Length: 114
Image (cartoon, rainbow, N blue to C red; front, top):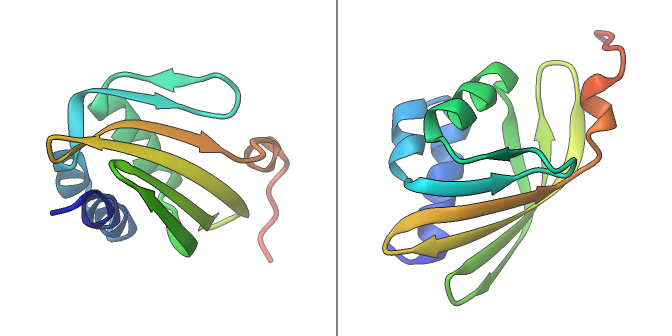
């Protein structure tokens, strides 16, 4: 699989809430960085956080440059939806780095159901 296929397979597994398959696409020594400086270096901790969000990806655009893949997408949970950009770096068939940019305030704002 090429880097784009690896990232998309990872995203598809997350959309299905198939955490074990998603984890198979992540390197054991992965570095994940969020917009507020938060970071994960443990696959299980990161996937646990993603499981709590139980979100879905609506990909708007994909950019590929060698082993780098950038996605522009809407990320929606049961209560919120917001625009994200994530930069994935792939090496030896695994995602080794994810850096994501979004407005984190949407996740801390009071939630109301429509």
